[in-house]
Each structure stands twice: as C-alpha cells, then as structure tokens.
Length: 273
Length: 227
Image 1 (cartoon, rainbow over the protein chains, first blue to last red):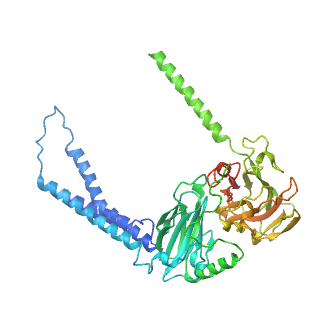
Image 2 (image 1 turned 120 degrees about the vertical axis):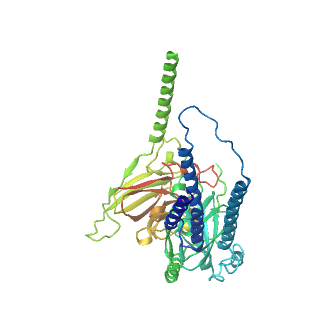
Image 3 (image 1 turned 45 degrees about the vertical axis):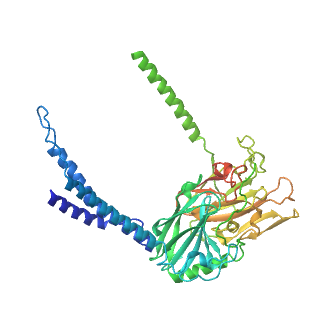
C-alpha cells in the first residue's frame, strides 16, 4: 500500500507542478503568490491521495460480511503512532506558516522598495514632484461609483481611466475612495487592496513582464458594481510608458484637477432632500 | 388525511403561483427601449467604402422627469427624480457611428471628480454645444471639456467603451423651458450590451448623492444595446 501511495503521490505532484497557478508572474508579488499556492498544492497532493486510498481501503476491507454481526477486534491506542502523527502534521503546519510569513513580509516591503512610501509624497495638497523618488513609482488608485481612475503622482498628478505601468518598476499604489467602499483588484498583478474613503491604503507591485491585466472592484458598491472593471490595464516597456505619459500630460494640460492628496472628501458629502 | 393533503397541496400551489406572478411582474417591468435612427445629416466623415453607417439618438437630461421640457413623463412614479429621457435603453447597430444629441435642461450639480470634466472617447475629441452664458445669451461652439467642473449637471458615460462626456448645467439666466444642446459621436464595434451611467451624483436625500435615481435603471443608468 505504501508503495502504491508513493507512486501515486509522485504522479500527482508532477501533474500539480504543470498547473498554471493564479495570478501569474507578471509581477514579483504575483509570482510569489503563485509559488505559494503551488507549494500548498504539492504538499496537499500526497495527503489527499493517502486519505482517498485509506477511505477506499476501508470501504473494501472492512465491508460488513454476510451473516450475523460479531464484535470486531478490540481497539487499542498506539502512543507512538499518535505522537508521530501530531508531530509530523505540526512540523508541516509550522513550516508553511513560517514560509508564508516570510514571503508576505518580503513581497510588500523594504527589499524591493528603496525608500519608505510616505517620504516621496510631501504634504497633502502640495503638487507632487516631477520625478519618482528613488526607485519607486507612486500611483494613486481612486475608487468611485462605478469606475477606478488612476493619478500618476510623480508625473504632475495626471489622471487616467486605464492603469498603464512600465515594466521593471517598483510601483506603490495609494488606494482610496471618494464615496462608498470599493476594492482594487488587479488580478494578474497579484494586488488586492480595499479602497475606503478617508484612507490611504498602500499596496506594492514590482512589474516583471509586459502584458495586459484586468482590474475589478471586489467590494459590493452599488448597482453597477459588476460593471466596475477594466480589461485594458497594461504593463508596457519603459519607452512606451514615457511616450504615453507625455501624451496624457499634454491632453490634460487644460483640465483643472485638484492638488494631489492621500484622500479626498469632495462635495457632496451628504445630500439633503 | 387525504383531504388535509389535498388542501395543503392546493394552498402551497396557490402561494407559489402568487409569488411567481409577483416576481415575474417585478422583473418584467423594465423601461422600454428606443432604437437609433439613420442620421439624415451625418456629423462624421467616413470613407465611402467603410461600410459604417451613422445613426442618431435624441435624449434629454432633466432635473425632474415629470416636468421635463422635451420628453416629460408626468405619470412617472417618481416625477421629481432626475433622469435621462425618453428612456434609458438604447439600441444601435453594430460597427457604426452613434451620434447623441442631448437636450440638457438641468441646473449644475458639480462633479465629485473634476477629471470627468474632460470629454473622452468621442470622435474628434470634441462635442458641439449650444448653451446660454451667465447673462442668458445663446452661445455655441466645439469643446473638449467644460471649464468649471462645478458647472456640470450630468455626464454621459459608457465606461466599457471609454466614452465620457460632461454635460454643462443650464444657466440660471437662461429663458424658461430652454435647454443646452450637446452633440457628440462615438464608434461602436461588435454586438454587445454595455451599461451607461452618470458621474454627477444627483440623487437627493442619499449619502454621497449616488442613491435613488442614480442606481435605478430608467433614470440615471441604463444600457446601450449594440446589435
């Protein structure tokens, strides 16, 4: 039985390693999330196969025989088996917990982002600087009923209906909302952050490959919540991004946007009848 | 025993029928639709072999649907609600140019996000507007944006098509029963159903102004059916 279990486990693990795990490796963080999910699947596969085998074995071997029922053999505990079972599962759980904590800390913090996010923003209400501080690129995500818009803080605060990012960039998202609760979910980027009014929620992504991505709202926010998505998010080359942002700045030269702030409380805040 | 069973079954059947009638009646009560008409004077120059037709839809945006100027709905269950008239489901042909002509007779409410003061996704990047200035004098011109986001009364937005157009509010000194007229065109591709909405929260009595008519199909939200 052990041999059968081992062979089936190996086959199962090989199959599990071929499966493309979400969200993919368009960003460093997304790639790490995919790796963690794949690791969990690889570890769970032998356990699953073992449980299924044990259930099938029991169903056949311990099937009720014909004829009158008799008492079965006396059940005895086995301390060594119990200790081994608890110890083995505890070790697996602690390893996974440690691995997850380390990965979570590494993907959202200092190793990829040279300076803390807040240092480059300046005072609320002040026009942002023209160039990114250090290696970071600051993008504000504004949730509103029922569309996300994006302000490029390091490029004069210009605003766009589509999220366009350069490849090989450390992006710091400042996620907020001007009305109801929303949630910014850039699926292929592996980023999900609540967009709450009066809150500057920070999320990180390091873009690795060019390609398209979808942004959805993941918090029920009213009638058109299901339509609050954009399939035209893109990670593009640095040159293409420079061309695009220059075009955006030129097209918005005559649009009067408010100064950048971590969050906004525009009127109306409450409409009377 | 049998009699009790029959009574129970009949009672449950009647109850189910009543619930079904109620649900179907609620779901089936949707606003009617209008189809675009072939434009007699196309706005957009297209190549002779492009195969693209241009159709036009006439709409009105008003502060109270019951007393609108062009398409009033006095029998509306919510006559004091803001709304797009005559209805909010519009049918247009696929792979065509759609021209929208909006009679805008509502007063300014203001945009929560001034970004929406700029027109996007329309042919030529500009909309034509006949309006009344602060002194009530008629003016006319082509615009890519409205100067003051606080002067917006409504917006015409189909986010999935990238179409966003601000609609200037009617001047307080405009003549009675007058309206601004905003005209613009955009392209549609293959068949599909796209929701449209307004980005000026004007649902009085609701927090942030996005309740009531803003979230009710038949008033400030609906569908563009490309077929």
